[in-house]
Length: 308
Ligand code: NAI
View 1 (cartoon, rainbow, N blue to C red):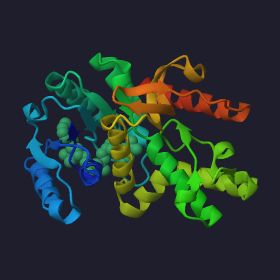
View 2 (view 1 turned 45 degrees about the vertical axis):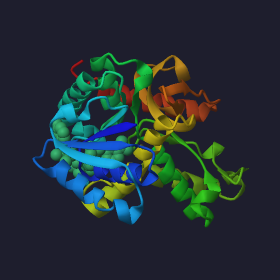
View 3 (view 1 turned 180 degrees about the vertical axis):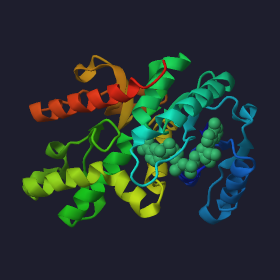
View 4 (view 1 turned 90 degrees about the horizontal axis):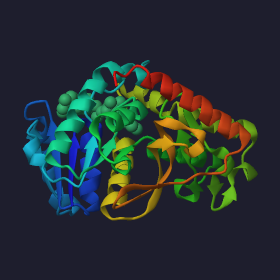
């Protein structure tokens, strides 16, 4: 199992580290446009192999895509991250060009690859890859909901004053401050609906804190976060690599599901060896359906800025 990660920056390197530590891939190739950067990150990570007990071989490359040949899975984390006060949508100008070029280079050397798109604005970048590469739709997956759901569960565990592992929940919709739809109605603590423990007001607060989860960290860090994004991507990579049939909310190209068409947006999906193997259609209530519709309108507006 060969995994390529393009963009050896904060999120790319964090993803490489989690993939290696989980020890399911034979090889991880980090590629970056910055001279020597990917090679340096790869060497640094390889020097943790005996400390962390993994056998995955990590190598680096400065923009030489022949090193990525025959990758099973490739992650696209190349591009600029946001600075405090910026929205993800503001990154489109620079990142669209990068994502288009990177995805085309990857496919030239790995025609059977499954692509995981991370660069922001992620739903629009995923749509761009669908529109420009010709890969089958199950082989292009956007990562956002897995991260947003992890942030949601963290916020719920804070409100419930319980360990995060007690909590289950999911965020669907667009990966943006206004587009996320945290499904508070369906969230549980050990299978008990969380609304049995928390007031509606507290749950609304949890939902709002979740939606600005990325912006809160960007303000604190001066750039966007990387540990949870890297861990979330590694979860998707593992589900595909190990054919786990695990369900994650992912940005998927919709064709009528949830009453939506011709856009990529976060919906629950089953991931396995064939990539995004199935979209799961939840029975949403009217309020959730309206939020999803508004979220889709936001994503489509950003897609309208693309030249495709
Ligand atoms: P970073 O700046 O630390 O790393 C980006 C890397 O991409 C840099 O090393 C840069 O040299 C490289 N790069 C730029 N153009 C390239 C090209 N044409 N080919 C190869 N490499 C290239 O940024 P960070 O924090 O790792 O974020 C990366 C992207 O991921 C950003 O767009 C950010 O907004 C997004 N992101 C998405 C998340 C999600 O949930 N979907 C979560 C966190 C970040």
